[in-house]
Length: 291
Image (tube, rainbow, N blue to C red; front, side, top):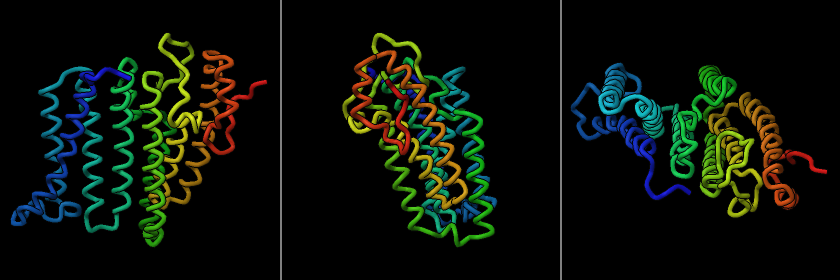
């Protein structure tokens, strides 16, 4: 684990995320001061949208004044995720048929921000802009855009499909459990955790077999796997549920095999013995075969 003092980038990310989250104040103003017509019906009418855009522009201007260079890049990303989380909350608690998409926005933005923040806590030496996982891969970006497109098209053509509240609740539970498991794995692994598969063993590397690692060899992947599928169950996206399941399964199968080659090289018989006792946690994925 990292020391008790959070690194500068971590502290900046928290402040910026909360600053972006302040977008929720706009509908609260409508609640507290109902006579201010310019924020009336902020989700559908132009004045509310203008208010949100002005608010975001003002925040970005403030960040430009306060921060410079690499620190600003951290701040603007954390702020963007805070704004997304805040807008998700606004939609979630509003009288709208887009409630489940609000849940999704909160889930997606919190996942990416918490990846950065937890990395700042447990392994600040590996911390970078990539720790947000916003630029994970082209395939990841296309998958996200596909889910937005499917949700919108089906909402306009078969709206009853998006009103299956019990399905969305199942998805929300999957998202929360997956997120919780992944972050528990990161915190348990501490400085041994890295977003990039390591090919060389550092002196600080140890084989972690306690906590959630006593139940799954790859708990962070298990959490991410069910989180990703859960986001599509939450949105009631049948096409993307199937697509995400197949794509995620193939990605983690290859990732686990690649990682276990390094782990066997690092820890030899210790890892082989651990591998015999503890499953990967992912369906029909056993990892690299050892003779």
